[in-house]
Length: 76
Image (cartoon, rainbow, N blue to C red; front, side):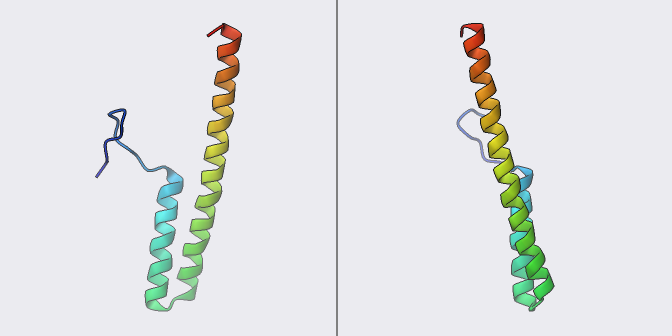
């Protein structure tokens, strides 16, 4: 179920990736059943996942910037 990545740790899906996958499933199910509400819900879930991914990336970059400042201040 999990793929081993270069550092030997199993790869995990973030909540945003899970939300995106659920959205794709909903959209596909809505497409197959001609259910416009379900398709719309799926697209909304995917859009929300995109926003979450953007926030996660911004948080990672902010954390990296803080770490760099800490390293400079501590002389590392």
